[in-house]
Amino acid sequence: MNIFHVSSEVFPYSKTGGLADMTAALAKAQAGAGHEVTLVTPLYRGIREQFEGIKPSDTQLSVPLGQAKKTATVWTHNPAENLTILFVDQPELFDRANVYGEDDDAERFIFFSKSAARLAKRAEIVHAHDWQSALTMPLLSLGQAQIGTVFTVHNAAYQGRFGRNKFELTGLPDSIFNWQQLEFYDDINLLKGGVVFADLATTVSPRYAEELLTPEYGCGLEGVFQAKGSALTGVLNGVDYSEWNTNNNPHLVAPFSADAPEGKAANKTALQRELGLDEQPGLPLLGNISRFAEQKGIDVLLDALEQQLAGGAAFQYTGLGSGDARLEQAMSDLAKRHPGRIAIRVGYDTALAHRIEAGCDFFIMPSRFEPCGLNQLYSLRYGAIPIVRETGGLKDSIIDLSQGDDTATGIKFEQPNADALGQALGQAFTLYSDLSRLAKVRDNGMRADFSWFRTTNEYERLYNTVRP
Image 1 (cartoon, rainbow, N blue to C red):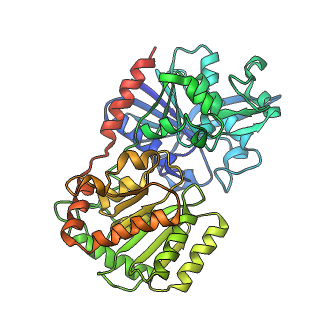
Image 2 (image 1 turned 135 degrees about the vertical axis):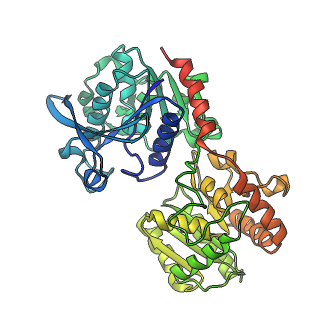
Image 3 (image 1 turned 90 degrees about the vertical axis):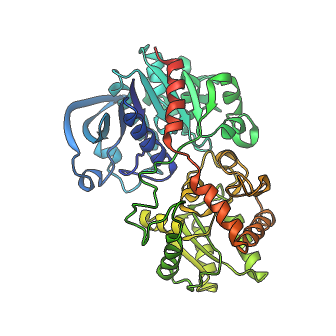
């Protein structure tokens, strides 16, 4: 099958979140299964210089953007057999310090989507991801191309909503600027257009597909998702175990696995030393890697940590992330007040992320909503028992202690508040004090299989339902 993915970020070339991991891993797995896979993404600042093997192609694009035209060149990279990455090179729009958050994001990603639609003409399936590439769906649908279209919503809170004056940039007929298609309270809503015009809409976990039908999670588009009916489905993301592995990982000080777990202790000690934590192997070490944002429940986590510290609980905590400046400051202040017990690193560091997963005993994800989540899946393989709120993919992927030690892989809590998380932490501390139970639950998680093989097969089945 000839599959064409469209994504505004792709690991390792660009990344602000899980979208980059998912699109890269899915494309790689599909190529490994024998499909001919192309993935198109913008050429952001620094990519060409950082990655050898990216070459110019003969393809030149001239794309109308309102009354103007902008040109672009296309670069290519072939990181694996059957896999081609296309980079749309338009320096005026993409040679920026930031991937998102620019005043002209409407122009940038409307241009990107129009470029992608032009490059996709040979595909059997075009699979676009999130609002930044959503416009490819109406462009291909109205262009009457004989192509099956799939659109994945990774996070419905980010919709690509802009003033109605931006609609003319699309070049689409005025007739589709209506409440049933691209219009949303007199604005253009690109995510809505992607869902409406795609042959099939998916999201990144079965639970999140159900949640999108409700006002609490639908973010104003619950009616749009409801109208999609059976053409909306959830497919749980997978893990690229060639990237996230504990046996052959240059970021770790010692290998370990479910069959040989002894090396995890060495990684814990090394992480404590690296972060300036007291080297106390007998204390449970908790971790989190996240955007510092309300969605991720970082405020809940802060309150729960404060409560546990005030109550005299014996533990250590390390966090890695960035985002809301107030939350960054609050986390940093917590670490300053509790040296040796709390360590915070503001920013993102891939190598440190691997070491945190490998060194921690428990990994906390208190998200208010989480379409899929990937870190809980990484944590399972790395032996960091997940403590997660019951939402989205977190609910789908973790088996709670209440189901029994023979099958449990983590700890779930229901309400997004410090008391509920505190109770879950209490369960974790009790589990940590029982070494045989701890080893069993950790082993269950490390043996769980969330490889892309399962996800790839499900997408192949779905593609065949819309393939021309």
